[in-house]
Image (cartoon, rainbow, N blue to C red; front, top):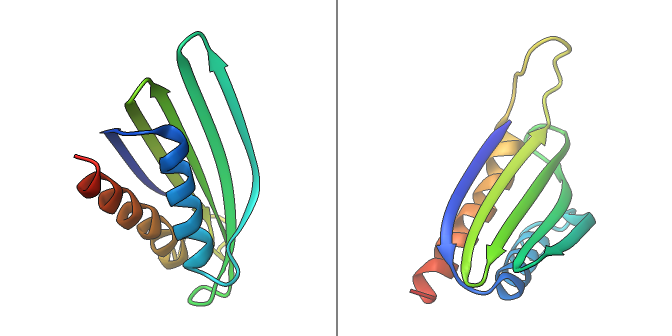
Length: 115
């Protein structure tokens, strides 16, 4: 499992759109599997689950992205999982790391253009 967390400032809908574009355009096999949105008072939370085939590992990996927003204050948590072919322990986490790096690059680019 690979994880990336970040506090940032921006617009939740805009960030989700940028992430979706970068993830799905970054891999021919990447797809949005499902998502969920909720608003409680002024707090919004969006969850997105993506999946893609990892050529390096020869298997599928998933990526869960959760973004919580209080106005323009955002908190993002992205967790990639799957990909290992072992039964009792993890070997070959290359696909997870690569999938997660697409989010890291996307968020860092977003931050650098919205500071």
